[in-house]
Picture 1 (cartoon, rainbow, N blue to C red):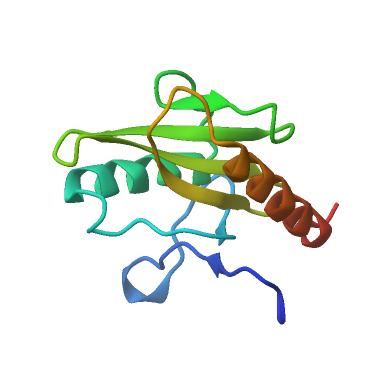
Picture 2: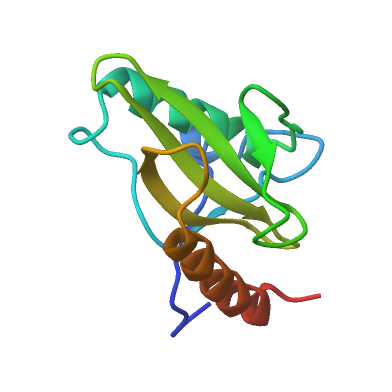
Length: 136
């Protein structure tokens, strides 16, 4: 989507330029904010986060303990829960399963039992922006 506030990360091509055969196309990721990188995440936490996002792209439905619904942000919003033993932190990736892509709304280290209000407000704003561009 030219001129949009987010980017899509498409699946990779198979060797010799052929596209992988699949029953359905993987959904791209739309990064509204945040990134998975080392540091601040340990490499193990970054890899785990990447694997969970890949499973979502392939159409898997994740549940506890990997993913938890976030109805305070909106319908079809969830958070991936990633334990980082090396950094002694809990990471969260807030995402929305859209019609054309999976929107990553926020990546943050969770320090308290509840999600901070500023994170919820930011995710709601990013979600509204994404939904305006997501299509039918």
